[in-house]
Image (cartoon, rainbow, N blue to C red; front, side, top):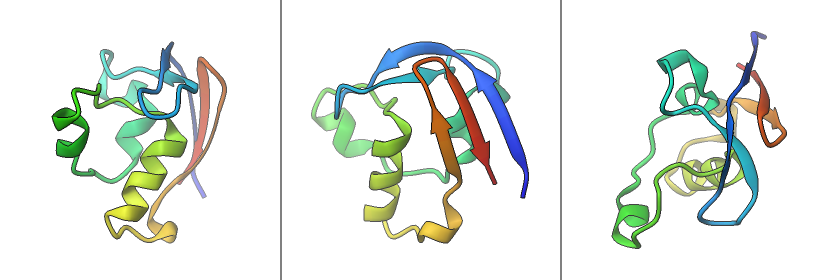
Length: 86
């Protein structure tokens, strides 16, 4: 199993209000979300919500879109730091 760590600025999830690390404005390898499968974010955009969501909500969205749990990385995070296992 591969373990990757990172540190990003804190953001607030538009779905649940949880603080989480968001590095989307940085290099591709800076944010944990690049290690998740691509999900359809049209429903978020239609609701006028930011498309960056916390790891918990992104996992929930991916599962709703028929990704299996075994294909999703495990992530532990604080407001600014993350550890992901692939």
